[in-house]
Image 1 (cartoon, one colour):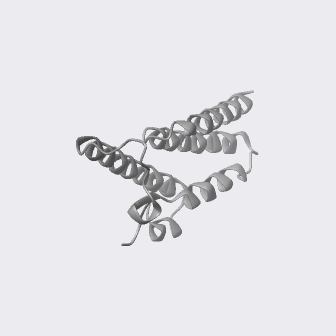
Image 2: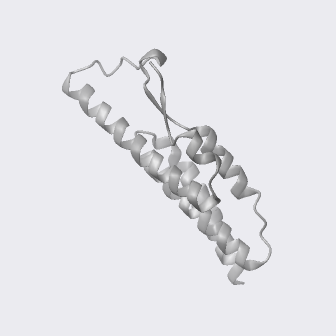
Image 3: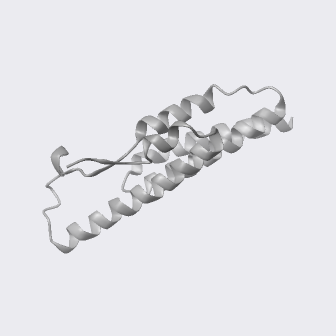
Length: 130
């Protein structure tokens, strides 16, 4: 059985940065809905909570490689002139929203990454206003 990755790799290859952010958001929302739906089904069937899913049972996954590639691109964006800082801050804030959606998919450890992205975006906004 093939694994379905969200977002799809072919969608991410030829898009501009804002479009890729939107694709990641859509993929994160789809992934979250599948995770929550699967958790609800397993609760109905009374599956032992100590039993974990093994890799061969995995039919969906989030495309973390695309998320990390986008994060690297955002971090490498230039910060001069101040308008570029504001653009970068906006993109980082959007990425933080994506992490928030993924955190809702039973991944509470992503909260630290989300907070770091928000902090970095706020620092860029304040430094461009000064």
